[in-house]
Length: 133
Image (tube, rainbow, N blue to C red; front, top):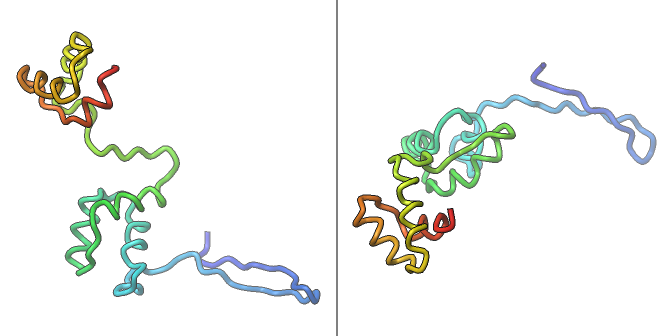
């Protein structure tokens, strides 16, 4: 595919209008503009949020990790998953679920304490989201 496409249409007077649409750009041409970070994200869908953040920082562009995460999905292929953390990274999810099933009447705060006493460190939010698993 070429770098330009030609677009044709007729205006309201019946005149044939032709425009060339450029489909390729050099991100470096936009350094220093407000859209630079967004174009950089679009051009580097293979990089992680941390990598993009690190590069933007070296370029003197300040964007939060949250800002990058919220916009990164715009340029990824359908079906791409961006997990925030590896699922069951410590391998204790089953154990945590079992402990929570055995103690259905405990509050979230008490479940967090009980899990911690049993060597399974989980946040209140995690417990809230998984207490019915």
